[in-house]
Image (cartoon, rainbow, N blue to C red; front, side):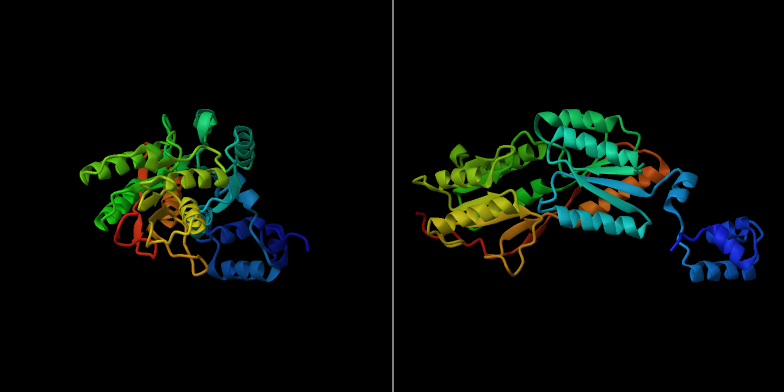
Length: 345
């Protein structure tokens, strides 16, 4: 079926195309089109199956009402929640979302960015790259003419908004919980320290140890590297658990790390939480099909998605504002993976 145009509607009921345009764009009263004629035009448009041209509207308004969302990868545990939240908020305001990922590859990122700008997106939401390529990607974003908001990862010298989950507060909550249960040999499974938020989480971990009079033990800190495989992480965990004074509790800075810790315990014949307590700091939802419901500081990616859209919408419709940093508060979830410390091994 051919696309129905305003001209088709005008021909159907014998009026000018201008009158149709005024009625369909809410300008009938302003341009002198009577209510009776307006209703005839709207009825004819519905009967003929008229759909407004987004392209034509974009050319007229100089906006596409489209946002670009660039994730690190599609498999990230926060991806579905973040994407759904952002898309829901955008849809309610008449925007749509174009989705892609960069896989921490600078050339792929540049290709995705170029493609989105080629479609004239009105704003960008980006999970930054990590490692040596990060600064180049940030420079590329600085040169773009559209509002930009970074998600989840803080970066140096950025001129964009940042919205992230407050994982530092989540780390504090986890440490207070475990110390309150009597644990003193508390390990940390962390992300690479070159990430600014990872440095802040480690600092909080150390601060909580000091406040409890517990000496920091570097052997209980398993720091991932960029691009580390699950097998390499599991090997590092097994090495830590082979210590004669192994940890009795672990703070895992992601759902994947918590699951890896749990699986290693099972392989070693250890019970969670009787032999080891685990707190996960993650946005992952552990459903009824999980082997265990982790005690967790739940990171609120739904709130991140809403806040990202609000910042972008404001800058698109009202002009750019000074960069802001917004943190969404974690939610504490009492699960099955922590317990009061029993006799140490």
